[in-house]
Length: 602
Ligand code: ATP
Ligand code: MG
Image 1 (spheres, protein in one colour):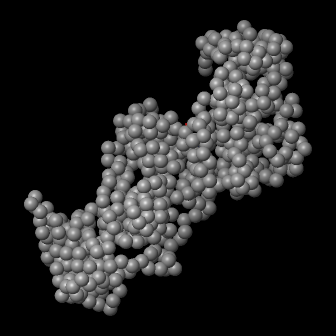
Image 2 (cartoon, rainbow, N blue to C red):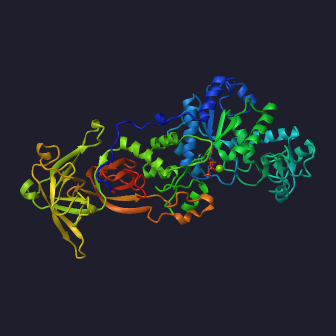
Image 3 (spheres, protein in one colour):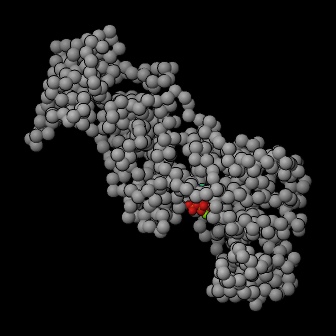
C-alpha cells in the first residue's frame, strides 16, 4: 500500500455530466419532434380508450415505466433500469411509472414490495406523476385483461385449447419445422366464449385447458405460433384474493399494462426482442377494437447489465441468502440495492455509474472497477477525512515527558476535507503513546521502505517528526511496542516543521482518546470474473476471504458518527458506519466501501 492518498479532485462528480446520447434518446427526440404521441389524452389514471378519451391532453410528454415483479430484492441491474427509465422521463418532461408486475399469483410478497419502493425512493426518484402517489399494480387490470381476451375470442383471434401441455409442446414445431394446428383451433367464437367463461367460473381443472391467441402455427417466430394467453390456476392472489382462478400469461399481460398506462416508450432487456411482434400484434388488435387508445406503446430493447465478479439474478441471489453464504439480502457483499447501500454506496454513485455505462443494443461485461470508481469519486468529493489504525501496535515516545511535559496531551488538528475549508477542522490529541499500523515498523527494512525502523525519522501526520529507536518484542520475538523519540519543534504547521526532511508520513491515533471500532473489510464475493457464465456453479467461486473483521483504533470523532455516515480513513479507503450494527457512542462498526485506488488482485 502506498502511503499517500491519490490525488483528489475538486470537481463535484455529477451524473448529469456523464450523460451521453444513446439510441433511446434519439428515438425519443425523434418522437417528440414528430409529435408521435402529441394527441394522447390522459384520464388521470390508467384505463381503457374510453377512460382516457374523457381526460385532458396528456401533460406528460413521454411515459416510461419500471415494472418489477415483487419476488425478490432489486439489484444493480435493476438500478440501471431505474436510472434509465426515470432519467429519460425526467429529462424529456415525462412521467415514469412504478408498476408492480404482480400477475403471477404465487410469488409475490409484501416484504419485496416494500423493499422495491424503498429502493426507488432511495435512488432519488418519484413515480406516477405526483409526490407520494401509490405505485400501480398490474393485478388491478385483471378485469380489463379478461375483457380483452373475450374481445380476441369474439373477433376470431383466440381459442380454448384442450390439448395437454405435452401435446402443445410437440405441435409447436421448432426453428426448422412449422407447427401443427391444434384440433381445437377451428372452434367457433361462440364455442370458445362459452368454454372460456367456464374456465373463469371454475368448472375446469388447473392445467386442463388454456386460452391461446390464434395467429399462425407456421410463423418463423415461434412466439407467434398461437401463444397461450390465459391459464387456469387456483391460487389466492395477494391483491385480488380468490376473485380469479384464471390468470393472464406475462406476454399477454405486459403489453396491456403498458397500454392502459399510456406508456409511450416501453424499455426492456434484449431477451424480450422476440416477443415484440406479439406485443405489437396484440395491441393492434385491441386498438382496432377500440378497447385501447392509439397510438399504442412501443417496445425497445437494450442490453442488460452484466458486471464482472457479480451475479444479477434474483433467483441465484436468493440461493446465497437461503444457503447462508451471506448474512442476508443486505449483506454488504451483495449486489442488491440494500446490500450496496449498507456497503457504503450512495444513490449519487449509482446514478453516475448508470450514466457512465450508458445503454447499448449488444451484450457486454462491465468491469466491477467501473462501479467502484464511481463510488470512489463521489466519496472523495464528499466524505470527511479521519484517521483510523486498522492493525494497531503501540508506539511509545520515550522522551515525551522531557520534551512535552509529563501527562501532557498535545492538540493537533486537520481539515475535515482538504477541498472544503468551510467544513472546518477536526481536533485530536497526541500523548506519549499512540497507536500506529503494525506494518509501519520493520526491524530490518526492505528496500524502499521509508517508515519506522531503527534510526529512521518519519512524521506522525499532523504532528511531530519522530526518530525510531527500536521495539520491545514479545516471547515469540515479534514487536509488541515500537519505541521512538520525538524531535522538538518539528510539529506540522509550525515554523520549525521543515527543519528536518523525512520521506515517510504515517497515520496514528492517540492512545489516550482512541476509540476501538469493529471494522469489516469486504472484498469481492466471487473470485471468478463471470461466476455464473455458461451455467457454471457460482458457489464454487465464492471468495473465502471476502470478509475480514478487525478491531481498529479510531479518531474520537468517529465514535459519534451516525449510521450510514461516510468517511475517508486516510491511507486506507472509504468507510461507512454500518446502518444496522453501528450505534453512536456505544458500538462503532465501520464497513470498507471501497479502497483509495483500484488495487484488487495486485
Ligand atoms: P431477475 O432475472 O434478476 O429476476 P428480472 O428481469 O426477472 O430479473 P424484474 O423484476 O422482472 O426482474 O425486472 C424489472 C425490470 O428490471 C425489467 O424491466 C428488467 O428488464 C430490468 N432488469 C432486470 N435485470 C436487469 C439487468 N441486469 N440489467 C438491466 N435491467 C435489468
Ligand atoms: Mg422477471
